[in-house]
Image (tube, rainbow, N blue to C red):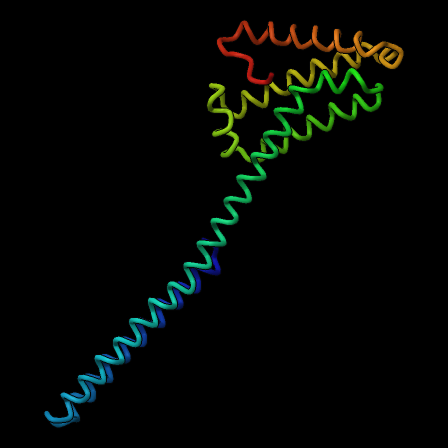
Length: 199
């Protein structure tokens, strides 16, 4: 819960305690200065005042906690949705990168690699959610991020190695270079005891 809600709850609780304490002090003072017949009537009055204060306290609590809980649930849902979108963009961005790169010129291809790298970093911002998303892959977010970086680096290296002839090569030549690069990256990953976590 945020600080404002916590502060309002504390103030509500403190106000209720003060009112109850004031009621008790008034009742004690009034008991000393009243006759036995008046005490019965005042006791009924004190009981009604106690009920009003107690019910008001619980109504105030509900009036604070229900909207705060709904706001918190909406925030968590929105954050989870954003994290899932960021993860999906990063994962599919790398998985389909060779198909996209082979149809682009050098400048556009370099910009696309940079964009997918940015999307990887966006997904890493949601580390707690990312842990859940990559758990089925048997890795943690750091390993997932490192594997993505390695794959992006492999594709970037292909572009760097073919800067002079990328634009003049055909799509099929480009995809062949990219797939070979992916295979080399996967070969290195196969030496480790884990499956392909990128695609």
